[in-house]
Image (cartoon, rainbow, N blue to C red):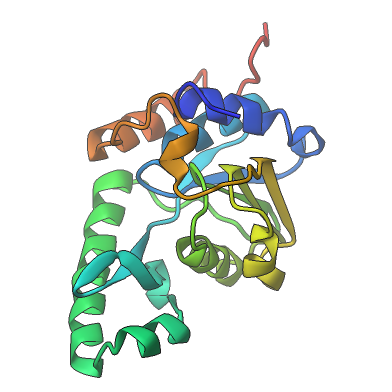
Length: 221
């Protein structure tokens, strides 16, 4: 399974979520790369689109290795095994966390501007990313959605490693993926075009979703 790009991945993912059409749903993309995927899901479901801003906490000397994640509303998820194995000190961890929390705040302001966050109370929060590797950022996003009053949390991704649902556990009420291919090493393996999504791209997706024509399922007259 290889997706052409994030928009193609979003359309294929939306096809796995037909039971949500017509339900009180808010689609929440994880910036940056999850937002173009989420935009297609929101369009197909006729649902509003927002973001949940989360950031991976990288090991200081090996930033691609995640020791956890932080997100809006002070949410933090830690992988204590990685912290212990990498020997990350408390001062080093505090420095990484402070930097990433500042970036969470910056991105939230940049993406929403003056728009208030869409209310989740009593609604189904569909959290969308372009794929899952470790699952730390997805866990943080699920906790944020739950804290904001979501009645149900659905975590939906185009691609993830086998057994990924166990990493999420009870944080999500439902986990949905298009593919869980063998030999999973990186999300980018499964995209022809996995070019970086910019802040401007995220803002454009959110603005398009907020336009008068948004929220109408594909093919609606």
